[in-house]
Image 1 (cartoon, rainbow, N blue to C red):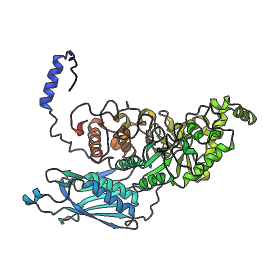
Image 2: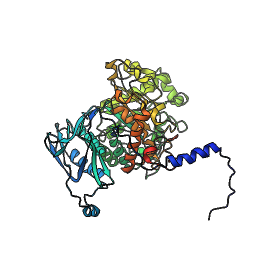
Image 3: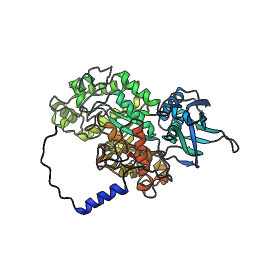
Image 4: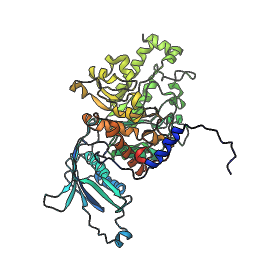
Length: 547
């Protein structure tokens, strides 16, 4: 039984009651219609044309491959995955269809994938371009063909994603159909680096959850998972050379073995996604001392890591040597942000070391970052550092450094003017834990803003949205990421001029609604697009396509 609470006395203005009643009559929420003038592919392809025919797709569609890379397991496994996604509902047999006399002749029964290169190396700047054609074999033919052609297997993956989005289940015929055929698509990404940061230190995420997130990234054509594995709160990663480090994990059940990490990297590669690991030094490292207390300046002053001891750099070297065997991506993130050096100046032995070396704490901060960079470079990595390193000692950074913007706008123009490469992640628009940032702010954020020189624009690798984990665990991480991450994904993939003109409420919002619903259908817990605060449930009844 429900408790008998007294009913509140609410006075609702009559005009609001009238508006509410009319809205229920005029807009009951039935038969939501899409704007057929829009193209419901996300992110929007670089070049495309379409027609007005509707084609049926065979649930038993087969894969035909050619080219030097056609037989790659990356392609065959992706085809099987997408086939399961596309035909989740359509079995190819309906007893009611048989009663109605329907035949089983399909317009598309074969998908041809041509891959020219046999290389499966996945690194920054790999060719992800592709062409996709869904058209008649020739002008006189009644036979339709679907063909993806790409230089690499990773271009073929992007083409398969686009093909899957063209395939729509029709509830009337209970079959999968492609509308607006014929389709001619020539596509390639605008930026080489299109990332998502995932923080597994503030809240541990099981490997299965990480893989679900990677899978969802592939739907939006994101291609870098920035794995912020460790931080001051926890150290969950196994490091064989220094086995006590993961004593800094929250518990013995919230850890990643070497095999776990390898599995994540392998899973991501099969979806054309690189994994960039981050070991943030010298700050954000208190958890290291749970296993090796000598890394702390003192037991009462625990970070930054002790700059005065060679042991500190021996441990960093051991960590990087061990995890280099796991992470083949050429970029490696060394953090370097938010370093409060008070512990160095207040701990006697560190203070003495600073005096002996004629260093200020700012000098020591630079010394630490540059020495860590040397270790990373010795492992054949390109170092990535948060922007504070550039802001404090740009002239002394290794010239190979990639500067990662986060503090605010206007940073990448300064970075590229100094000859460094830049990744855009302005926290005001691309930090997903900022729940009050709306989809349109994410969508209109431009990595090249303020950079007009084409040669300098090329130094901007791209950008990434950041899913910091202080307030998001397994229960909330996907709906915090999606659908706002998709808004950034289109900004990073699609041509700037194609998505930066017109009223985005009319040109982009209906398409983002559609993509959010596509994610939901694929099992991704993407939150409503237009919530005042991200990841919250709907405000009331309504269509997925209008929330």
